[in-house]
Length: 255
Image (cartoon, rainbow, N blue to C red; front, top):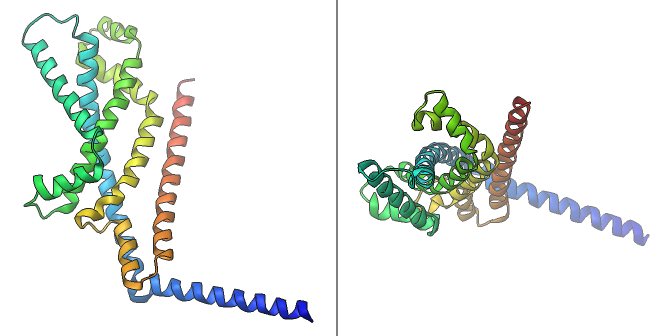
């Protein structure tokens, strides 16, 4: 008899718990189409990440070429305008890397939005610039390490084919360097996806901000915030899987 009563009580507790979860799910996501906050926030996060990645790669490649060219050729160059320009641009790049890597990304975002582009009404563009510039500093060091790992014989091979330094970098060195640093680049882009979660500091309705808006409307934090965390996790897992497939194909192409 006692076991029967206990079983009934457990069943009632489970039913009550499921009913509570169902009600909270409805209130957080179904009522007033609140799930659209997450959908619109996810779309904004993906757009910011995509364009920031493109900007980060462009800035990173340029900065890496300047730094690696300085390290590899500065001692062999004759005094003149070219050497002076290389020293100047290398100093600019080093300052850029020091400042960006030495300050938090959320502070950089707020400086861009509230000071540098205070008159701008395009918050997404400001976020893309802030995250792209931040990512470019880390991409630059990753690619530079890849370039420096390429044997000097590759440069000599380029010269034997009649290529100048720029052509050798473009056709021979950079492709090999990118292949070597692909895992590190993938990790940087995964970090960038998660770093965009601070976009809400400047009023952007990104994924994290969308979850927080739902929380502020329903006064329930569990479901919206865990939904945001789950979406980020799914994105990262999918991206990591794609990178793994790409690495496998690159290894197979070398055989």
